Amino acid sequence: MAKSDSPRVIDGLSSVRAAQRSGKTKGLRTRPSRTRLPKTEKGPPRKTDAPGASRIGHTVVPESHEIVCYKCGYGFTLRGRIEKALCPKCRSWLEVGDHVVDAECRGMIRTIGTIRILDGGVVNGGDLVATDVILAGSVKSGSVRASRRLELCPGAAFELGNLSMRDLTVRSGARFVINRRIACRDLEVEGEFKGKVRAENLIRVRPGGFLRGDIQTPRLVVEEGGGLKAKLNVGASAAPEPAAKKKASGRKRRHGS
Image (cartoon, rainbow, N blue to C red; front, side, top):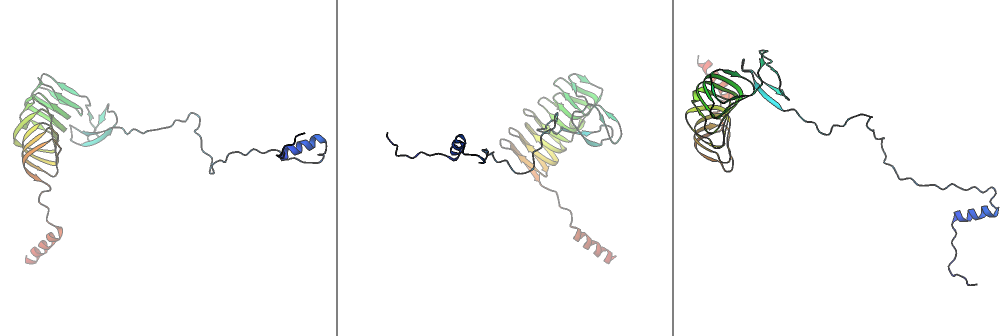
């Protein structure tokens, strides 16, 4: 009988089972096999969502709207979709709809929405007030007031004395030359504009826009592609006299009196 040179290897469990079969394992205790479980992360148990609970992935901030009451002139802010508006100062309900003028207008329109005066629309003795006014028609007489922004489009015809606004925008393709001085908060030029402008906050010339004239403003931005040829007065006006000097001059006056 051939013999194998490699020894037979018997593990512990096999030897115990062999002893059990031979009847020589009385009183011998065997340990049950153990299965190692994967290690779990230490720390407090995670909370699971309650049944029916909803998760919010993103929070959308409602749009804010600047409102100026056309009755008392008080400014305030509303958020979200506007269906009704009550002035918190004079307690008046305000019209919120948009209006379009495409023919002759002699009446009165007052709204915190937008008024569009289209090509062919004529304001002739009317009184129009809105948050924004887009002018592509003509204003012969009467008054048009934008409590926020007035947009001058190509083809607009007007006398400056009939218009009032806070911000002024000259749209692309429009060309205007105005001899009277214009006072506004912001001026934005996308077309061509020549005139005398005093802006309280900012003048911006967009690509394709060109601004000429006499300009006074604390801040001026000419974007790449925009043009400027004007007499400029940019920055703060004459600084107020320092308080220390005022006190000193006051003491001198009292001393001399």
